[in-house]
Length: 94
Image 1 (cartoon, rainbow, N blue to C red):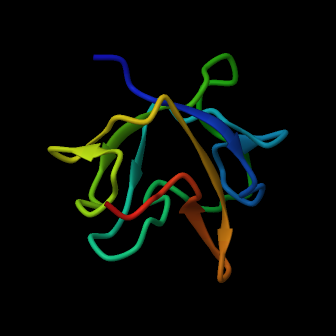
Image 2 (spheres, rainbow, N blue to C red):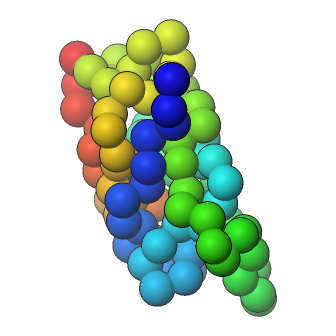
């Protein structure tokens, strides 16, 4: 199984975001109630692997139609802001 790609990320304040691209090797989505990017954090410098494209490693949102056993089955996701929080915009209720 291949991990879904983070196609775009609007959370430019994230330490893993450079030019609206995620460079974390794998992110975690959700806090069991909200589709937040649980990997998001800000730092004075950028991190991650600048040659890597971010992927979804785990998803804790069990009511998403793309979720199977806490693994994302979407071909790719988009991360953006919902109410000032970095969220998975690909989330779709089952």
